[in-house]
Length: 237
Image (cartoon, rainbow, N blue to C red; front, side, top):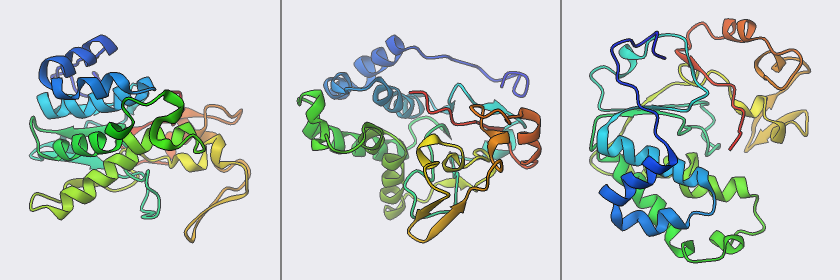
């Protein structure tokens, strides 16, 4: 990142700094923020608040920059990126890379959706959170603060007089669709999502999966010459 953007200012925010941000600038959110049962929910929320308060570009730590981002974000006030064109997939616009000017109104839509989803659960025992004990933790966590929340905020923003945001097409920031490498999606020969089939032939995607013996950074990057960044989606939270 630094090599590609030598004039940028870089900040690495800690859990302590994240909570202080909420306490100082968003005190009305602190009780809900502290009530989250998973730390990733606080991290998801904090990235929204940092972009609202200070602006800039947020990127997960496991991103590798392949080309400078300047031409993607220059003269833009808000930039998000799609991983897939599959409109049935509510994770199609991840929250792992986002950019905006300070105090952009879109982030208020995100904050409202987080509060709306979290407030009924904020004082519940962890196992009762969201009333979704039977759903996988991965599902309800992301519904409250992750990509599904982001997609709902985009829909609300588009319905207002303010939208739509600029959304980069698949392949620019997220060249790898994590459904093709994730272990959770490897239980069958293909992924069927409302008629959309993602075929997974043996060995086809191992080159881009660090958990596979056939993984090769060079070979994987060569598959995506137009990409500006790449992440291998380790899903480690």
